[in-house]
Amino acid sequence: SLPKQVILVLDGAYAEYVLEKDFDKGFSLTEEFENIILTRTFSKSYGLAGLRIGWCYASSYVASILNKVKGPFNTTFISQEMAIAALKDQDHIDKVVNANIEVKKWFENELKQLNIQTRPSVANFSFVETTQDQAEKIANHLLENGILVRQLDSYNLPHCLRITIGTKTEMEMTINSLKKIIW
Image (tube, rainbow, N blue to C red; front, side):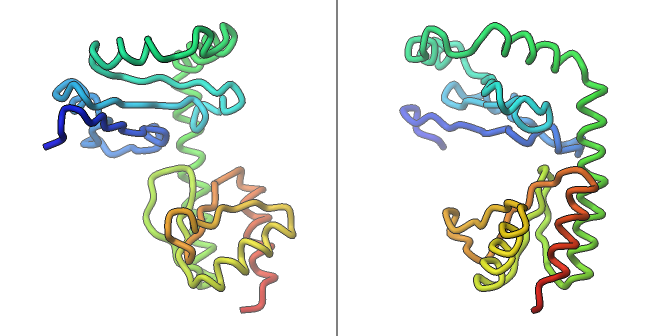
């Protein structure tokens, strides 16, 4: 059981990418326990990263505390209006998520052909697992070719990379760049 003086934050940044019907997005836990907060962002599937906007779902008790410590102008009116418009356009979100899933499947199949292993992920990125030397080599080679990937040293996974899924053209460029590495 979670001690009452501890607040648990459930980061739902990638929740829109989870299509499983039995996925509990955290609302039930937040309703059951006063000290659990669910957060979401408009930066991922909604494509509004530059606006720095998101929301949280919490008990009235925790929400009242958050309202006391937040800045008076924590987001702009334009950001709020764009977020509201994005919420109303579920068709667009469905298209974005489905396109991401399709490109990701293609990309991970191409990685497999290059003997680069991936781990399951429902987010908008591929989780690549290799050796630490190979991860560094891949990250540096891609960076030299204008492609930025994240090596996961800070998560104590120096042998892993996170490669965000872009457009099909961008992912083709990534694969073509990877094919130039001599293993």
